[in-house]
Every structure is written in structure tokens, then in C-alpha cells.
View (cartoon, rainbow, N blue to C red):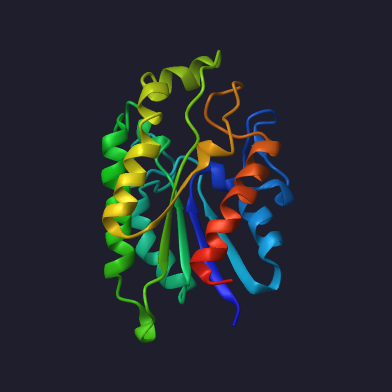
Length: 213
């Protein structure tokens, strides 16, 4: 039976391209690379929103970027699911949002609880959860981005350790996105085409293991 994977993320999942200020080609996005690798064994759903946080409001946003508030609706939309991959936390580093890695980690824990305690329709079982730490923020000359993430470099460097410990505590899978991809100095936040493809290739093995493929 074909497995269903939901990729729940922000602009790294949406495919924001810092060079064009647009969107990466579909085939370059990490979720698309994962889909191609898994082939007919799985259906990969990309649910990425620019600016999405783990569980915090962004009052400057033109849409609801609070990942915790939106998640239950998305879970209901795409049920049943075999695996949800959560790649969030970078936007939590914004000083106007939360500004710390610890807050982002708490937000991830909130998302895990929402998945586990969701009122799944038709008695579907909750999916397994893979927590992915986003690559560390890079120094940039892009003034607006640098100003938005004043402590972002140091705080984002803490995410992988915090997320790994949280995954162990909550019995989730874990993958460090920074082990295979680096952010672009064009804005310090996003991935160029080569790095977003590398992320898709990087998560393939643990996704296969968690899906039993």
C-alpha cells in the first residue's frame, strides 16, 4: 500500500529562492526530490508556507503563520498519514516572533502533541513524526534579513541539539538538516537549488526506515 508523507514547513519547504526572490522549480524543492526517490512507494505532500512558525503569532503577517493553530486543519485535510516531517523553527528566531531556540523547541513539542492527540477521523492511527532541524542561519549583508534575525546565527546553531534531545524524549525520528545543507549568504536564511535538493536526498534514508520501505 502506498504510504503518505506530509512535509510541514516554512519557506524552506515552499521553495523560496533568494536569488530570484521567487520560487525554486518544482523538481528542485526538497519534498519533490524525496518524492522522486520514493517513487510509487509513497505520496509526498508539500505543505510549506513562507514565514510559518512552530506555534507563535507573527502580527506583521498577511496570513496565519502560526503552525500550531493551522496544523489540526491540515491533518484533517490529508488524513490518513503514515509520516509527518516537521521542518520549522527558523522563523521563530525573528525578534518580533520569539527570538530563541528554546522557544522554537517548545513549539516543536507543541506540534508533536497536536499530532499525537488529534481527533483523527475514522479511527485512523496517528502518523510517525520526523523532526528536522533547519540548517543554521548564515551571516548576510542583506540588511532587512539581518535585522529581522539579530541573534539568529547563534540561536539557530542550538536547534539541532535541542531538537535531537526532544526527539529522543518524545520518541520521534530526528534529522539534522545542517548535516547536508547550508543556507545562502544572499539572505542568510534560505537554500539555493543545490542545497534544497541535498536536503531531499539527505532525509531519504531515515524516511525509508520510518516507513518500512
